[in-house]
Length: 196
Image (cartoon, rainbow, N blue to C red; front, side, top):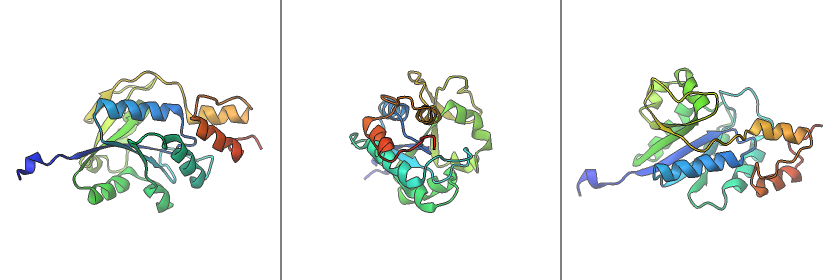
């Protein structure tokens, strides 16, 4: 068989604290999967993000919320590898591991425009570019222009953020439709993000 005829699997990576996962995450994942004809989107919650100071909830809650957010989409998979490392999550370590385990897979790392601007400061960015193709998604107030090779994708602007959802909960405001109903039910069940 001709080596060139071996088709590579195409997997999108969506990492984050998912604190909590929200409708915006799902919209981005769904649109990018279709736009790039990806076989799967892997949701990878971080244990401790190098880009954020703190997480509001523990890794078990964030894992369970993400599982509930994506359960009804056959193209979405939840990967807990970074959570199991129990240390600060650097993308270079994660993607080196995934590439070693999946040599016949092309990985597409999905990031918002805020992270596109931050790419020069990513740990081992040049090595990382050998492992993944970055896909930059528009975000208000940030540019998709970069000196690094990225696929630029424009999607409908979705003004939802995990921090805004947490703030709404602290102020006893509704988060209905901002998160999937299964995530909302989980947040209510465990009284997450409440002002205590």
